[in-house]
Image (tube, rainbow, N blue to C red; front, side):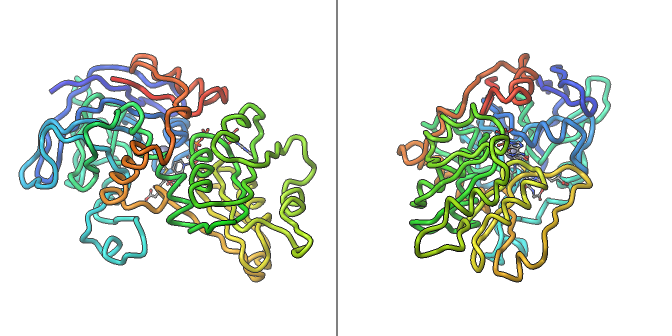
Length: 375
Ligand code: NAD
Ligand code: AHE
Ligand code: ZN
């Protein structure tokens, strides 16, 4: 069949909206009509050329929601008509990683996913002249129709609005999951969130859910402050107005009883390796944990004095908030529908597919939190 998609033809160039060919689902695969997709900073990162796994031409997008329209042979867990959220972190429930109970990083199809291909080593997308187009993160939600492995879709309730729950496909789950699954923040904790964009705000609401007391937000853009306060930030630091962010955080977290100071938990939601160092070093001697969420460009490396770790600080990372997609995503949709978490205020712009590049412009200008494309 043919479908409309925004194609990344070359690094650093705007996407081009065009008709493309899409083959039907093969064994173990499903075809999904994407109804809405968010634009995540990671899409921008790959489009910019900074992603070592970036491939062109490709169809980006990994934060979608839609309806199953066709299933390939052997598919049993979903059927046409089911509402689903595509999963860039699948959950096969059979590989060593899934069965370990220690990680959400299912390895069943990671190798081909990173090569922009379906598990059988081929692409379902091609240009009208037959040139193959790569898949992206196993999702390619910047296409009205896409094909995914069965293990890479989470079936969700049918009364949930696509234009909001698409964000659970990445940003919401990543931010909240980093707090609950990765850091396991406890009631009364003091936490710092670096970067108050689409991920950082969800870390904030995760911290509020977990019962953190002091929630410090750090961002270079003062305009991020009101929304961050809405999502639970108690203190704001703009590094432009402060000589030493680490010292400022240490001072803020000191008490008469604890003159050492430092955050119990910190989260990097910027992808900047200098910020990652500050995020580690502002945590408390003996027990502070810093969680890296941001994705850094090819070639970037983190550094600190090993003494920071010798003295008990812990550096961790998280992908998709440590969530097991098919198990956890339907529950997060329930949390949204039950009013336990908020999504609507973070979706600051809705666009048509034809206007998708405006979503990237708004992100670059720091004017949006999430832009959502409605098909
Ligand atoms: P975003 O553009 O919405 O937000 C980034 C925020 O960081 C902005 O508010 C910006 O002003 C701020 N910022 C940038 N540089 C800063 C600095 N030096 N100090 C303080 N603040 C700074 O992006 P997003 O969608 O929230 O994504 C954030 C990061 O998380 C990206 O690197 C993205 O690729 C990554 N990400 C990772 C995962 C994962 O599973 N690990 C999932 C989604 C996104
Ligand atoms: N391809 C990049 C890394 C990109 C990356 O870290 N992706 C995160 C999700 S970001 C979502 O917005 C992730 O899930 N990582 C685990 C994985 O297996 O990709 C690179 O540097 O090569
Ligand atoms: Zn993302």
